[in-house]
Every structure is written in structure tokens, then in C-alpha cells.
Amino acid sequence: MSWREGWKQRRDRQLLASRAYGDRRAMNDPDQSGFNRAMYRLVRLFFQKPEQGAATSIYLASSPEVEGVTGKYFIKQRPVASSPESYDTATARRLWEVSSHLVGLASQGAQ
Image (cartoon, rainbow, N blue to C red):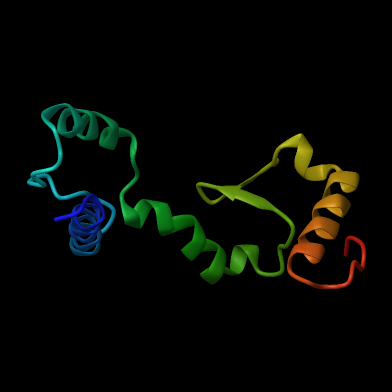
């Protein structure tokens, strides 16, 4: 078996595990070392469950409290200020121009 075939088989197992277990990796993966298993167990303490991660999106899509609210950034169902860079109109204009060029659209300026 070539290294590419071996890599593809391993990647296929990982994809199957991620589909079967959602965002969790199969703990009985023979390619996963003891160190990796220990690190995964430690790090997952800081992860949100899928339901928790989706809560703000569901709130924004379904709550009458935020109906008509636009242009805001939400974390844990609360509006928060985004980074100062996100308010820089020159950067936004440049991003629009570069993106338009990359996808083949005529540059129309920031909208």
C-alpha cells in the first residue's frame, strides 16, 4: 500500500468517525496516540456542546426580540462590539475590491 492509499484510508476513517459522532472524534481510533487521546479529553472540557453552539443562531432566527435588528454581532444571545478593525471603512472597501476581483466581478466599491 502506498503512503497515499494509507493516508486516504486514515482520512476516510476520520471522516466516518466525525459523521458518526458529530464533532467528537472516535476514541478507539488506532491511529490516535495515548498523548492525543489525553489532550483531546483535556481540551474538550472547553468545547461547547452542539446545542449550546447553536443557541445564539436559533435565538436570532426565531426570537421576536431581535426582529429587524441588523448589523450587530452576537455572543451568547447578547449584542457585543466587534473588533475595531471591523469598523474600518477603508479596509472594508479594499476587501470588497479584492474579493470582487478574485471572483470575476467588476469592482463596484464597498456597499
